[in-house]
Image (cartoon, rainbow, N blue to C red):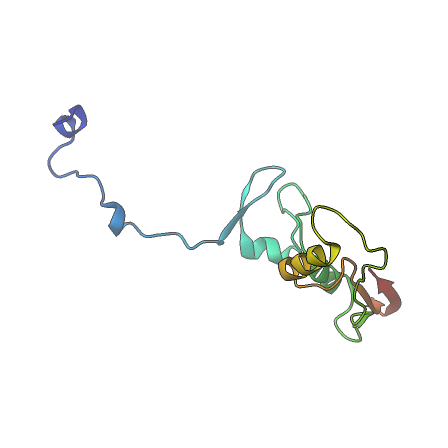
Length: 127
């Protein structure tokens, strides 16, 4: 018997780890700047800006363009253009392999996304 068991009264027993309620994953997010623990839904409503210190968190290009451009009349420019290896670039891996790996990881065919649309009814093109 260890010293803690001797000190604890018989009615107070440590909780069983299996019986503890678990916190769902991804419910909270920590600001990388001020390290405040924030509710993820509040951060998303605030367009991925920390409400405590106004730090702009990283988001994907499509999400950023969705927030920037008006919802109606938005269209993508050049979505069927695919990168090619015209120079036959040589490295430790083939350039075509790198392109395929990047497309698998990101879900995009190219590094640049271009959208046409409007910002508060003013025509704009954003990339």
